[in-house]
Image 1 (tube, one colour):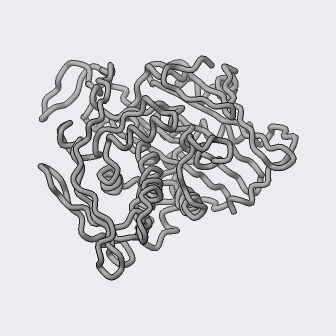
Image 2 (tube, helix red, strand yellow; image 1 turned 60 degrees about the vertical axis):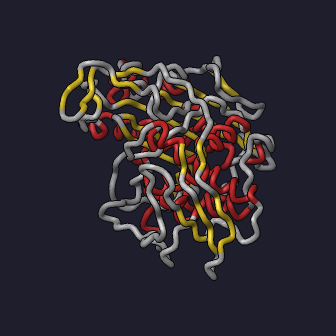
Amino acid sequence: MILQPGSTQNSNRSNTDDDLLQILMKANPALFNPILDNKDSLRVQIIYTQINRDKRNRPSFKEYTFNLNNNTYFYPASTVKMPIAFLALEKLNELKVEGLTRTTSMITDSGFAAQDHVYNQPNAGDGSPTIENYIKQIFLVSDNDAFNRLYEFLGPEYIQKKLKEKGYPDVSIRHRLQLSRTAEQNAVTNPVQFYDTTGKLIYSQPLQKSKAVFPELDAFIGKGYMSRGKLINEPFSFATKNRVYLQDLHHILQSVLFPEKFSKKERFNFTKDDYTFLYQWMSSFPKQSEYPNYDTAHYWDAYCKFLFYGSEKGDKSPRIKIFNKVGDAYGFLIDIAYIVDLDQNIEFMLSAAISCNTDGIFNDDKYDYDGIGFPFMKNIGQAVYQYELTRKKKHIPDLSKWE
């Protein structure tokens, strides 16, 4: 595989242009021929990382791709919440303020036009907003408000700087989600204060104005879009939207799951307890959370587990653990996942993106997630899983770490 400009690679990532993913899809023509025949118009991109263990259980990686192209834009939607959750934990550790942890009360104030304030959180055990609760909400149900609060704690300039240092120079996370804000409003982030259990202020961060410079993306897609109830017959512009390459999201997740395989510079600055916390909530079902508490009628087990399950409802096996982050917006469907079957001793990483906007019109809320997107996600996850069931391994992996 020829790496596109801005993609990242280290000695622990083995890249190949092997046709394995295409072979797996061609073996299931009824499921995948529509995908293979329309791979470019559907903007399909897939990355599969095969994991092999040595006799000491140390992992090595072999990476396969399908139709990967950094010049093919996809809107990353909620997948941007994953690096922001990681950076929020890292920032807490790097501030080195006594008593400041992910469970410290975090008050978001307002100091600029169109800024929200948050003084309490009803779905928290004690009603207190915290970094921990926001991260749980991000991975359990992909909560937009939780992302916005962490985005404001970090600020786009800090996000850009830290991800560039880790080897992801082309990531652009420049705006809040599900809120209509100007570029100037998104560049200004709220004042934030942290208080201990006695109500004592232990850290205060003033309003920040980002100086980050982001490229205007050459991303005009489709044939029209709805604006104020009218159809505009021209491509929809993603020029000022968020952008993250699929392989960057894939490798960011990989660096958290397998930090020992990445250099100190590439890793996030986490404590052992941070890793335990993340591993728990990245792989949990909404029903496994007491605070926040989620109604299983609205938030089923696989609500945020597209790869492998698609949109399936009902109870899912806790023996199959999926550490992941999904996204869906503007007709794009994305999932970045590490899938583990504890009973079959199977593990692999799989990331995929697809556009489900078959009519080419944006902002009309007519996207074919159910007809194209979710079936594709489930089918490619199952295809790779079935391949892994038959794949010969020199050493059976010890996956007890994930128990």
